[in-house]
Amino acid sequence: MPLSAAYVTEEMDKASKAGDPEADQLVSDLIDRQEVDGVNALFRTVGTLQHGQDRSHLPPRLAEFLEKAEAEPPGWNSADVKAAQKFFSRHKGEVAMLQGTVGLIGTYLSPTGAFTLRSTGRLGGVEGPGRRLSQSSRLFIDMDKPDAMTSGRLAADVTKVRLVHASVRQLHKKSGKWEYAKWGEPVSQKYTTGAACVFSVQILEAMRHLGIDVSTDDAHGFMCAWHYVNHYLGTPEKWLLPKDADEVDRLWRKEREREWQKTEDGVHMTAQAVTYYKQFLPGPSHDAFLAMVRHALTDKYADMAGLPRGVLDLAAKPLTGGHKAVSGIGGGLLGGAAEKTTKVNPYKEILGVASGAFREMQSAAVRQGQDDQPQMHQELGDDR
Image (cartoon, rainbow, N blue to C red):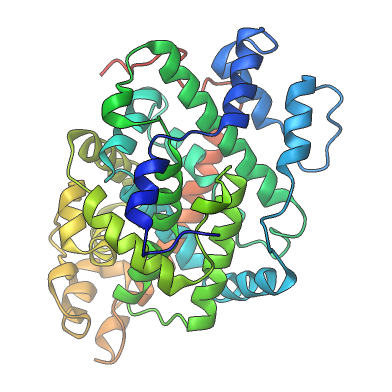
């Protein structure tokens, strides 16, 4: 039975101490028995995995794990697939962009999650934040494809992320530096399910803040997609997000108030991400883009993340009151269209431009993530 708002607090406390035993044992065996040469070699192996490929060249334990991991979520059916496809047919552009901005920044607001991400990943440094975007985008970069949940491609991509999470837990375990009594398990089931909430109902909330109309049926379809992803991340059924968007919204609001905090790690990674975004949306476009992200996230959480307030501070203005500011300061981004009528949503054109730019950003991040580069430090620590 999936999670419920009625008992989410107690269950998430338990989930904070739980990893993913099957994936954890697999990764431990592969590394300890030298079937792969360390964490980065495992990452390179995982990066080559494809749905339906010949697995005879893989270590037998890995091939067996992948076969078992292909099982569909309990109760999954064609109606769930159609509901998800319908949602993405209407909203795929803005959703991909919001997941890669509001969603990623939201994951930095979990103190334990932010520490884990920063201590094991190279958001800064020589690879830059594109590395983190590349890794994180695997959760949602192909969700909007019509065959994503029928071809097995999305399930295979998410299973890669599941193995990355297990590798992170192994890295921390071997370091001897992780404070289990204080932080629970690294990349725990609590963090995994919390991240799924951020990328699902937090995004639906962001869309409402931006005046994007999402029907009840479409919200259900989006939650079906994240129920599917949550399953392939290795989450046990008792901690799976339900397909009911309203129920997930209720349980997430309870957990968000307990979980999200301002931390130096979270602020650092947000700043790195903002710098990365700027190369794709320079000048006035960047100001308008950040203002839109702030409004989508709300000032409360944007301030927690250290998201800067810009000269174009739409977050403090009603939607119908920001037209001249958008048109004047945004300049070429909006082309004056927002001044033409007071009925226009001033974020519509920002969304359109930003969504296109974010696709380019994702492509660059994925290209940067080619397997000839290590994706994590071999040891804990990031030379900060």
